[in-house]
Length: 226
Image (cartoon, rainbow, N blue to C red; front, top):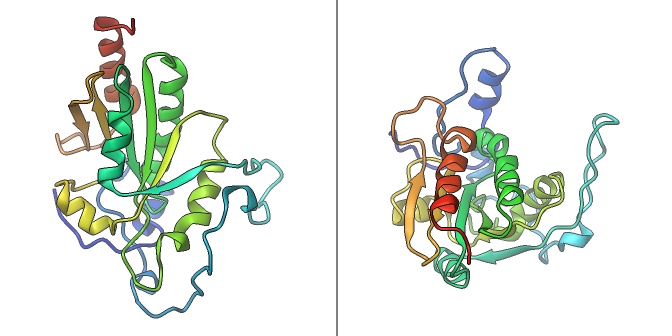
């Protein structure tokens, strides 16, 4: 799969294709406008981390917009994520790697919540946001409010939310990941069993309904929690 430079902003190409009635874009590393890849602080960096409870949504575009609810979002690197997974021994762990710059990620995200609701006693669901681009003037706190806004717009859930403190491009290189959304499934012993990342050639990329949920459901049936 094509390995592009990670540039942060909205996934403009995905938005355009979504409005043309064509097939969904194959997920790649999300692209952002040049203004968000520059180290020039054109937008002030927050002086402090925006708390989840203090986050407020922008003015609603229409009356049907959902209110933003408080969400606990904890900063972590990949090693910290692995430690969290280790703490879930006895449960199947599903990790969703996503970004607000990735439209396919946000479309699939609600299925992570549905998966956990379907198997609450067998599965721990973790969302791992990779919005942070590594720009010196734009630390993870710079992206925190919009990540919280998206997470807060989802239905009530008990998913564990983490935000990556490693620049996404560096993380992708380190874990040899070419595209998002990506879903990691770990067994009850903490071992990685499967990574879904669209690299197997499916034009639609990762699909919870077609790939992840059937895989996890089979694991639950074969090895139910004692």
